[in-house]
Image (cartoon, rainbow, N blue to C red; front, top):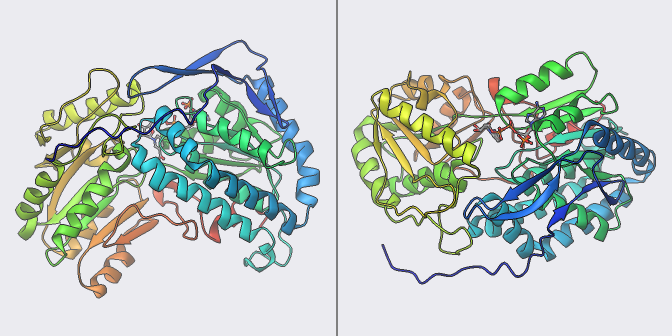
Length: 475
Ligand code: NDP
């Protein structure tokens, strides 16, 4: 590996307050409870700020504020709503360096990813849905589709600002108002977004941000004043939400876990496929719901692919997420690290072979080296359960039919990847894979114009693209 001099991004650009309240009705307000939570930098365990935990009464205030704002916001012509959303998109672009640094500090992801992937996609989402606001009548949902009302949105910690954008941009474009709860460990960019709403002169109450833990999320999704629930997170919590929302008339979209197969055929451009495997599972420390966590490689090229993969992994740099050379950042929390460790140990105990490159681990913070398991059987926990970390399980296949069979042998169905030079094989496979997104000769590629969502236990509903509007319209 080349020796690189450190290239740290400066954190001077962000101004983190010692303590944050809730953003309700366009104002910063104190929580009615007195519980606060410290959010830390997972790469150093340094406390970044203290954040309020919203109580049921706070959630109620936020929903009331959103309800009041709905009357005027939904009555605005789409072209007027678009102006606000375009303004938000432009401010995000202007403040993108600050937001990228803040995201990296709070989440642990490498600055290279927050700067070059998360933030450009966040801005693109707002630009894209701003464009829809005055064209809803042409989206295929009737001549004058109506908004639903107040959307209660609960998001996870793996792409904090991007998940906020996926939820808030279409909701506002369609004329809904929003109460959003960010994840407990990554609230800071959502709070910065509240500031952006003020900067954009968004009418008070159109967006409300309530920070807190699972109970705050539960209070939000169970609030009778919420018309639409949008959730991204674990299948377990998704199931609970589906149960609690059933029969209430609330519209629900769930984007849950995954255990995607990344399928490499012998005729694929193997060097390119190796890059795709790395991007598929080691991007964002593997904290990606659509991560290519199961590599299915054709037996005839398995040794060659594995050798190349191990060589490539030996060049990845793990360490300070604020360093622009870093490829693998910190695991988001101690709890997530414990979960990854537990599943990796289960892999060894069940008989798979574990490999990681030589990789110095920093003393403080939460870290897990890139890890590859070979000799994995389909029954192993590491082949079935979502690890949500930088851990790849390798299985082999001989025929396309066997690849399909193995790829679909999972309770999930969020994404899949196919690597082959044959277009006909891509189409044949894509037809048979039970996955909401199928990538061909690429992986983890996102675009606001493209719908994203799952089958089976990966959830239902689509986010992104024209299809993403449906979740926020009374159709
Ligand atoms: P959760 O599903 O618990 O968290 C997602 C969001 O839901 C967070 O904002 C969380 O709050 C909130 N929440 C928790 N409980 C409730 C509830 N009862 N009602 C409403 N909202 C609730 O995921 P975790 O962060 O606990 O991660 C656990 C596992 O889930 C991971 O190891 C990973 O496997 C998977 N996961 C999958 C994601 C995906 O995109 N598919 C994203 C994140 C996790 P709080 O942050 O306070 O817990």
